[in-house]
Structures are given as structure tokens and as C-alpha cells.
Image (cartoon, rainbow, N blue to C red; front, side, top):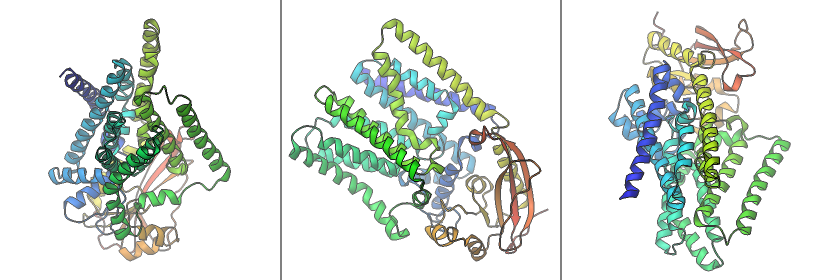
Length: 499
């Protein structure tokens, strides 16, 4: 009873911290939704709306897509059925995300307390994360991050609880659970692989270990394989289009890849050397922690293979689980006086980082791009007929808030055919002609305000809108630039703009 009560307290505490940060952020930032959700989040929401409306798995209403992780899309589709306006759906998604994030943290607190009868250090890390709007947005972003975090946290507890078990069907069920982790975010399949490896190394009874590893693998395959088979049949490849595009842009720099690979291998060697040297002394908690550590190294390596996409923070949710445990683990080793000093230091650093997070999300130069998004959305709603077909590279926020069908021209949530048959073959313009896009929204970074954007199409276009702002965001902090948004009317336009 006491454990359940404490679990509730941890859940409510995390809920209140997340709610406070999001509420304050919403109060201070007019463009709250555009700052909180990256464009990928709006991709999810729009596809969920289309599925809920019976249009199928499509972003633009024309081209089928599988550019998403399926378990979160199922949840979003249910929410889209219940909440049909853009704002009400976004609010529902935030509420569900906060509940899942708080639930995941409460489970981690339960795990840590069950092992060490101590939770202050974990709450120290929780305060640093949940009072920082940038870190909260890693979990609450319209995408699968909160669900992924919840399932990873629950998975940690389940592996910890079942590690000493030898029942075939118990491990089969555990494998099925990690099949759900895989469906929540496909790179979660790497965690299942590492669990199999550590099951095989569990003790000296290889026959028993192999039996349990097979049981675990069968459970995971039973849950995850149907999705991969569906993708193969419907889209010609088991991996979603977004994953295939990221793989296409993998670095081809031999020196970079060599350094990255050596770093990854050295990290894993370090984990296994530590495991074998301390194997007899390691408790179950430490073994599970090592599994998650090896998984985290694998995630870093996997995403840094494609440097273009490596800086999206939501990829690194597994590292945040390790971060929650880090201060708690350090505090256990300190004297009472040192604990006070260490806690004070962590809180001061956390406060500085939180203030930095608010600056990043409230500064006019760092958020000018979102103001430009809002102005562009308002202009489209006033001047572009609702039945028009738009094309855009960052298309998520446009289609979601304007409620105009918009074709994604970067290919992440388009059909595989577009990316592989048109875009990388230099036939983008041919595609635009074939489907009859009325208007094209583009943006470009410029070094100087007086610079003009480059407009290159093999058909005549008419510029009907242009806005330009000074921008100094995280990626351009040391090289601030001007960003220009413009809308082009194509010669295939069947719906003329409203003056």
C-alpha cells in the first residue's frame, strides 16, 4: 500500500512540474504550439486526422505514406476521432504526453527506491529536466517521445523484475512487450537485441540462457514482424520511408565514419570489460543499467551516421533515462554534507539551464522563424482557397493550421515513389506538374537582408507572397542569418488567390 501511495506521489509531482513549465511557457510565448511541436509533430497529427476521417494513411490526401511509428499513430488516430479541431487535438496530445511522461518518471522512481530506499537524487534530476521548457519539449512534442519514454521506463522495471526467472512463457511475454517498444519507436528494436545478448551472458548455463533468449526473441518477433511485413507488401520495403531517407543521407566521409565507429566500439568494449570483471559482484539493477547503457551507445552511433538528422533531441530519450539515475547514483556515494553541496550545485546548474531554455524559446531573434510561420499561416488562410493543393518542404505546420492539403516535397511523409523515382532523380518539377500543385511554399537562409532567394524551376512561377526576418536559432547562433519565406503560384493553378 505504501509503495502504491509513493508511486502516486511521484506521478503527481512529475505531472505538476511538467504542467507548471508548459503553462508558464504557453503564457509567455504567443506561438506556443509552433515552438513546442517540431514540424514532424504536425506530420503525425495531420496523418492521424486523415486516417480518422477515412482518407487512409496519407499526409496530403493523395499519396499513401508510412512515415511514422505505428503505436503512437494508433493513439493519435483515436484522439483525432474524439477531438476534431486542430487546437483541441493538440491540447489532447499534450495532456496524453504529460500523463505518459509523468508515468514513466514515477516508474523510474519506483525502480530506484526499490533498490536503494532513496529517491531524492532522482527527483533532483527530475526537477532539472521538468522545469526546463527545452527538455520538457523533448518528451511533449506531438510525436512518440512520451510513449517511448513510458515504455522504456516500464521495460526497465519489467526486466529487473523478471531477470532471475526461468519460465519460457514469462520471457516470451516480456519479448512481446518489447515488441511494443519497437512499434512505439523502431530503433527500440536495438534494445531488444541487447537484452538478448545479455540473456545469453546471464550465467554459465548456456542451454538455459539460449532457451530464454529464444523465448524473448519469439515474443518480440510475433508482435513486431506483422508491421514489417505490411510495409514490405504495401510500400515495397519493411522500413518506413522516413527511415529510408535518413539512411540515404548517411555520411560517406571515411574519416568521420572511422572515428565514429571506433568510438562506438570502444564504448561497447568498455561496457563488456566492466561486465566481465565485475560480473560476480553486479546486482540485477546494475546489469539492466548496462543493457540500457549499451543501447544508448548504439542509438548515438546510429543517428550520428546521418549528421544531418543527428541533432534532433527526441532521438536520445534512452540517455535521459540514464541521466535521471546519474545524480541519484552519485548522491548514494557521498557523505551527508557532500550531498547538500552536490544537490545545491545541481539545482544551480539546473536553474541556469532552465533560464537558458526560456531564453531560447522566448527570445525574439531565436523564435522569429515561428512568428514568420504564424504570419504565413494567417496569409494562406486569407488568400489561398481551401480547395487548393500546396507543396512545401517543411509542410507540417502549414497543412495542420491552414487545413489545406499540402504535398510534402522533402519526401519524409510522402510515398517512397516520390523520393526515389522523382526527387533524387532530379525530377521534382515533373512530379509537381503531374499532380497539379497550385502553390509552392519555400524558405531559404540568406547571409544579408538584401540578398534575393534562389528560385529554380523548369516552369514559370509567380511570387505572390514573401516575408523575411532576422534569425539566430540554435543552428545559426554563431552565424545568424536572414530567413525568407515565399509562396509561388504555378502555371497549373486551378484556384486563383483571393485578393
